[in-house]
Length: 90
Image (tube, rainbow, N blue to C red; front, top):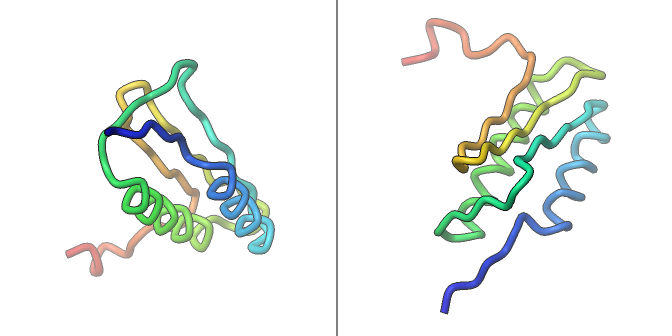
């Protein structure tokens, strides 16, 4: 039996607390309608948590990390950091 779950409140609260501790803000942008994906909730949350953690480290102090979920289930985590140095990209 498939279970439909959204990102739970604890995940969002934990992410917000991490942003506050790092003196950053986090903004969630979601589509107007639910987006369904098939997969492991644990795996998806682990990937998102890692991306958000990295973005909060890169974001300048007092800046805002944006987490955007598109209607096609594309997830973007945007920060305003310097990015990976060209020599380290390979």
